Length: 124
Image (cartoon, rainbow, N blue to C red):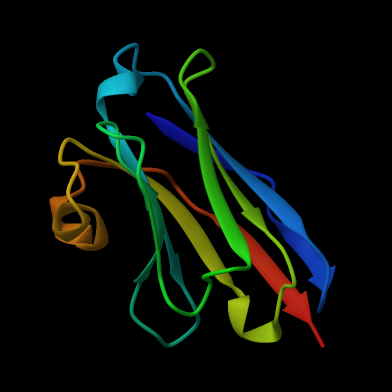
């Protein structure tokens, strides 16, 4: 089970940190990803962290502004979002994946478990 938190309403330029807590004891052997879905749009990849190599991958639209990190002891993955823009407004989902390559992690169809999502709204 994955539970996201930390969403909310912020102004453009501000920061927000999302958290995703996993109940799975084997959290450390799952790669974790963040996806988002804006109104009227398809869900898209945002960022991922691989369980082998601890590599991070980002969508071009968030590179340099968002940072994904994980705490295996707490079974939690974070998404630090800075310099937020109105176009970042979306429901943000975390998900778990047994793969670890970039190809595995940017493809939402390869994720096994999903959270319920948390709303992020950025006002201009």
